[in-house]
Image (tube, rainbow, N blue to C red; front, side, top):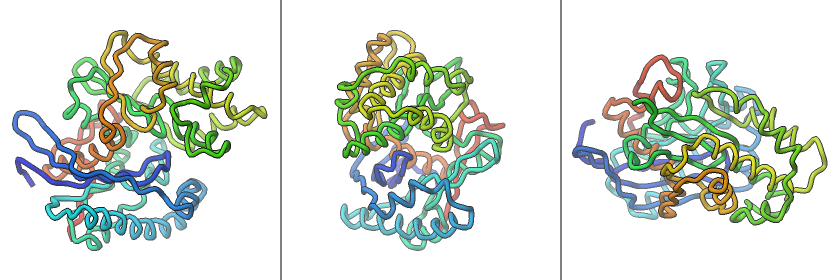
Amino acid sequence: MIKDEYCVIGVMSGTSLDGIDLVYATFSFTDRWDFKILNTETIAYSSHWYAILKDLITKSLDELKTIDVDYTKYLGGVIQEFINKHQITNIDAICSHGHTALHQPENKLTYQIGNLPFLADMLSETVVCDFRVQDVELGGQGAPLVPIGDQLLFSDYDYCLNLGGFANISMDLNEARIAYDICPVNIVLNKYAKQLGFDYDDGGQIAASGTHLLALGSQLNALGFYKEKPPKSLGLEWVNKNIFPLLEALKLKEKDVLRTFSDHIAQQIARVLQKDSKVLVTGGGAYNSYIISKIKSNKRVDIIIPTPELVEFKEALIFAFLGILKLRNEVNCLSSVTGAIKNHSSGKIFLP
């Protein structure tokens, strides 16, 4: 489907379990790609779905398949409500990431629920989804997938840094796009904020009130992942195995854990940035002024935090764009980023 302009809905659910991000946007191509965001919304998960999604990695494959059917139905309902609420009538495709249930690329395994073919029938629209599976089959990490969007939509910046469940970064290096996960962010911070009765550490205020624990900070910085060369990616399994045991080995105050881990995040991010570079920061962590200030104190960089709709919906926007590239049979997955054997056009197209 080659056109000059596309109207698409992008749908994203991330590891931090904030909810389902939906964006309706137009993309146009002349000599370069441009976009315009028309409608955005985040649908928070109910306590029922939050509990299910939080424990996906403990489920068997058969259990996941049952959950997949229920989640796809639920997701279809959420998307339909978004379409109705905003009276959206012009849709070329709905491009959905789904929600990651398993991500073990070393075992040639990645599984995103919410990507079943009947989603297209439910919505009576073309659906493009399941963007990670083909990359893992081709020997890649299946992540990160956003960098092609960074390269084609946000080329004015030296780095695109996303602070969501994890911190991931993308940049051009030696005429190739490279990208990788740096460290966990909200997947850890939100857990400890919740123990204090908050959904998240607003602006990093709790972290700022805590004490930096030097020994814990050193242990975190010594983790083997930080010495690995990209491409590399992180998942909840890695956090459960490597981070939470360290944080829970001692009975520490939550505010001290938040302070130490926030400092750790800032140190790991600053380590990969070049001095005086221009950095676009998006994702919920962009609002964590404590971490942002700590990055700046670790490295002299120009940090740009864009409009709230771009901060909060950039990933959903880029998954909308990945779907367009798939419809055009153009590369939307870069081997320089994921480690796959070749660049490719990833995703599945379901017609109603």
